[in-house]
Image 1 (cartoon, rainbow, N blue to C red):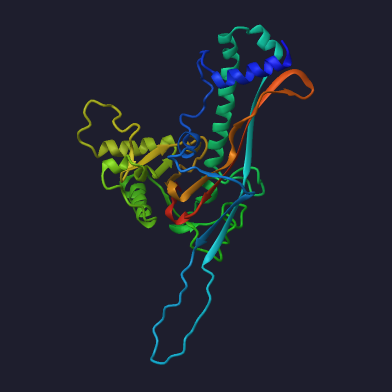
Image 2: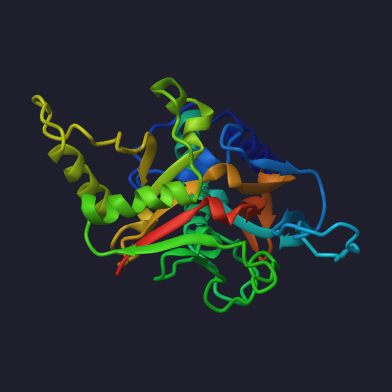
Length: 344
């Protein structure tokens, strides 16, 4: 089999992928919120045509010019800088898969060739999805410019109640915004000690009001794009405790032993369990109130899940590789519309 024939076979099979069955048990996460929902057209992903990075401008202050005056009192005019410039740089990710010439020779026949290609491509794409998920629910280590800014970079915890979410550990600014000059660019924070109506639920109500969330008017709007823009995210352990509260206040549960599984809401906003926030990953049991319309997930046009053609690997004359690449970054334009509470 010639090199050109193998390269053509790999490329054509990857596009077709029609046959070949296998049971996939490699997936470690239950759901992929980022690639499955946020990085979609309905999720609000923005495709940027060009540029080395991204800029946005925030108005974080009022002019402060209003005052009471006497007749004929001289004017007093002061210039106040009310704008802050946000800047973010692209982060680049890649994954790959490889094949050995003799694997293809030993698996001749269309269906068997698919059995070689399909699981490896699925594994490669799962790697990408897992990498995006891990970065989105975390914060990079200060000084590591390779990893994109995630939820814990933009929405920062603080033990004090109020808009106290400052810069994450190791950082002096957030999105290039100096919080000393622009203190309004902070998220809402609080702690709780018990998952109860008198503690966590009461504090969530206050956070809901402070961040100016508006509940959808009816269930039809809850299912609409507006209703789904605002979500609460937490680990499964906390969600399970919240489900217990929901069941305890409902006197007519019927025969369903777990009536709230998969449909827990807070003021009709979905409560979504996230693997990366589960107890094994985060012992503080945080719950994030996220207005996803304030988050921008950017991808560079032509470089989002861009799959390369198959090519020979250097120094491995029998090996062929395929790469998938993406350029990606996140930005939160209004931290005040978001909150985080955690167990103290």
